[in-house]
Length: 114
Length: 112
Image 1 (tube, rainbow over the protein chains, first blue to last red):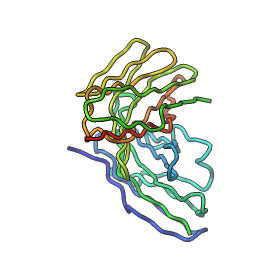
Image 2: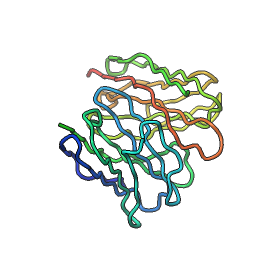
Image 3: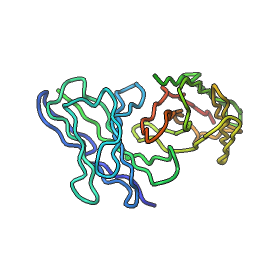
Image 4: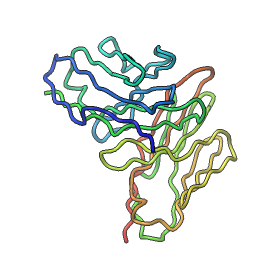
C-alpha cells in the first residue's frame, strides 16, 4: 500500500541553524501539506501546496519557513533560522484529486531545537 | 476563526462498552468535517469525511454522524486495539481553501 515517507525521523539542531525536512508524498497525489504538532498540543496547519505553488498558509508559516518540490517526488520544508519554539513533530501529508479531507500523513519528523 | 472543540479529553472504556465522542465546531461555510485516528508517535490516519448535516459514515466498529453544530463518533463494542487519540478536523470557506483546523482530540483507552 502506498504511503507517505519522511526523513529524518528525528533532527536535533542548534538555535539559529537552518533545517530541511524531507517528505516523499504518495506518487499520484497532487496536494501536499505540512503540519506541526507541539508535544501535547493539537495538530496545526502550516501550508498547502498545489501545482508547484503555495495555495494557502497559516499565520505560523512566516518568512522563516519555505517549501519546495525540487523534483517529481520530494516535498521539503525549510526553516531558515530555528528557534526553541520550533521544536515539534512535523507531519507531511498528501491527497489525491478527490476525497476532501482524505489526507495521508507521514510518520513525522521530530525536530528538537537546543 | 474556525473553532473545533472535542470532548471528553480522555475516555476509558471496558472492552465491549459502547460510547460516543463529541466534536463541536464553529465555522463559516463548512466544506467538510473529518475524523482521524492517531496512535502515539505516529501521524494521523484518515477515517471519515462528512459533508452535510444528516450524513453518516461507518467503518467496522466506528460510526460518524454530523449535525449543523457537532459531530459524533460512535464506538460500538470497542476492542483494545481501538485505543488511540481520535481527532476531529474541519475545512471551511469557499473556493480553493485548503486549511484544515484540528481539535485537541479525545484519548480513548479500551481496557480488556
